[in-house]
Image (cartoon, rainbow, N blue to C red):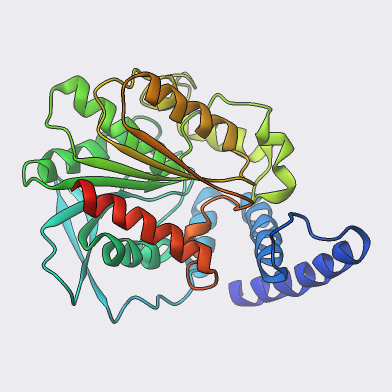
Length: 321
């Protein structure tokens, strides 16, 4: 059923993009036809699944997971670390993986699994030449804030003791990675060597700005983003530092690489976060990719710029950890 739904969405989106280009030209100056169709397919799939129950949304995204081309180059195991179930991905070939990358997956704190993120885990392991540990943290609304932070921190405490630890996260996982570092600092735990953030959702209180002006070029809608924030928060403040680390004190965090696309709805909040981090004395590099939509890295099988961004991320991790 999911395959048929996606095929119909691809067909309808392809026709819509052809018609739009005939009338208006490209949606963004550098977008290829396939890139533009991909954006519209994702936008329509997010809108379709958002009308379902949360368990059905998770099942829907799992069913839409694409085959993972990294399976032959990186092996996956499942084990509990710090009492939290985790996926562990290790490169099969190449130099020894002495460094560990704690990766926190995206999915608006509501969905995300091994199925949806297996390829990104494998590509991160290969690019960073690291063992990737991905906690399957508890999800809202069944487990609202701060459950995800508690789970990420439980795994962090175990891994940081081994040394050469880096963090990474995409979308909500990027915000969760920063929240984990903030909590580690506040608890006096050892600090990771660095963190690489992909399209990090760092401000759940943000409204307006690029959330509206970039809506046509990204996957979501302002109403959907607000719904996700409300669902995760479960009544907590949207400016709570561990829920929205854009509002946290950032002093003492390790070097950060923050990658964001110029077409993203969250572009404005990511720019503001990177500026605040640098003002706080953090070595924070804002790596902005013109015209890229949210989390473009997950389409590395399709687009060279996705693979290039992951290589840059891997080089950053290798340099610092």
